[in-house]
Length: 380
Image 1: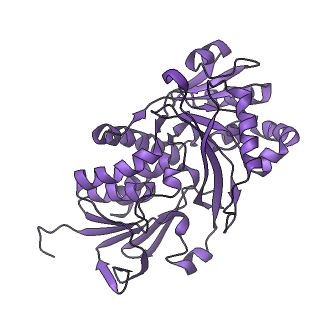
Image 2: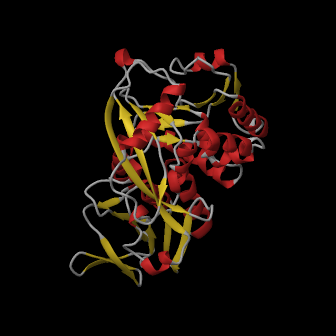
Image 3: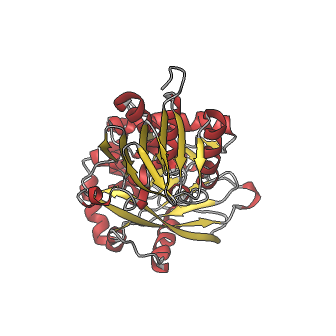
């Protein structure tokens, strides 16, 4: 290679993990080509809340990556003309068990995070959509950012192409990697100095034997979108019910969490069985994304269950007061997730081939920070 030539990198997958990898590699000086089997991103990266969610990440590397990602999102969105808003977030408490966990969170993390407890009146001032009936208090965090993933992921690819010269090969399924070369189509191939495999839930396509030995599975979640609220009415920050305290790792530090889990198990056992916790976020066009459920297994049921959507709506009505609950659309998403508690998979397949996958439901929150850590600080 001549001294003035750039090193080359190939990224497989144009979801948020692949796009974050492409940005990190391009920033490192690589000429990057992204291969995506579909004509545009269609997987879990466009089927989520659009929440960049530091509040849910435990202390340490995960929280640091989340903040780094949040700041990168803000920078990229500003430069690319992508709608975004640093809304913060509200977790609403309607019984003493929920309130205790939130108060412990604020005590544990309040010195290092922009968070704290609010009275019911203060919570209502933050969000006119918070149900005031029976509200005992709320956990406020100022750190969260919202994007509309349907817009943001597509525009992010265009931004990387324009800003960093990243090349995209859409409708191209890579089916084999060998000796610094990716193979696709009928005998076609491309070589590169470095290859990052970020194929998400399609992980069986490449390295199936390696994956079969790993503690990894798939997670299907059901979500819905409500129609735009009338007269440009805004809910303010995303709203979360008490079930969300059982879902995110940051709350595991709260001593009262086991008592809350036991109470929920007695009163709402089906919600725990189906992995349901309920949140709502609002995008720039006024629509509300709500969800979700979590069903695990290597081959998730492709059909949505109306019963699950009904449970989500029922619980949503406990802590929200929207102007319009009309359903606009529903869908499911599937992502890869580690079963050993790890928040991602990093697999070195060869000297110059790595697999980055299984960020679970935290891809939007962690990907930029994690990719910078891996490619800029750790590997290259």
